[in-house]
Image 1 (cartoon, rainbow, N blue to C red):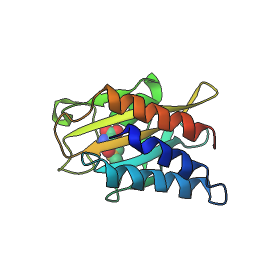
Image 2: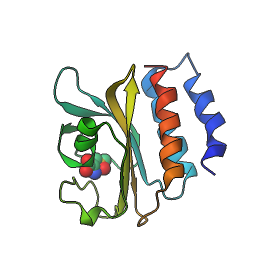
Image 3: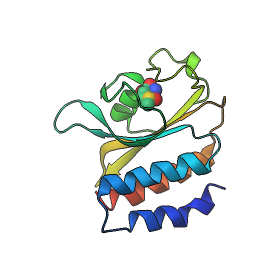
Image 4: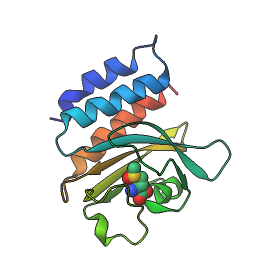
Length: 150
Ligand code: SME
């Protein structure tokens, strides 16, 4: 199912008449509306020279967490670790920032430009333990393609 979305991801990113933020927002909407266990999909990016993340385009409920310091929450940890972070059960995490009480699981995959960790894609799920390596490979693909237009 996920792999069948790859051509649509590429065609959205190729819409050069649209701004980068518009295209990233369309990617978020594509994922949220086509993957039943993707309930919130968003991009965070390093906020200039600051050691914090700033929320970028997203699909799903608005979040209060528009700024996340490096090291805080799942997102802030990925900003430092440069590694995918798959959380099957958010209630088992100490260093976690809750956006909604309905969220059961989360996956965060870093986004690299020329080897530098510049941001991440973050997905929340209301389904317990829904993510597999298929999600990781798919989200890595998306981030690699997004990196080409940043
Ligand atoms: N849960 C994240 C915060 C961002 S929201 O999921 C949109 C975290 O722990 O970093």
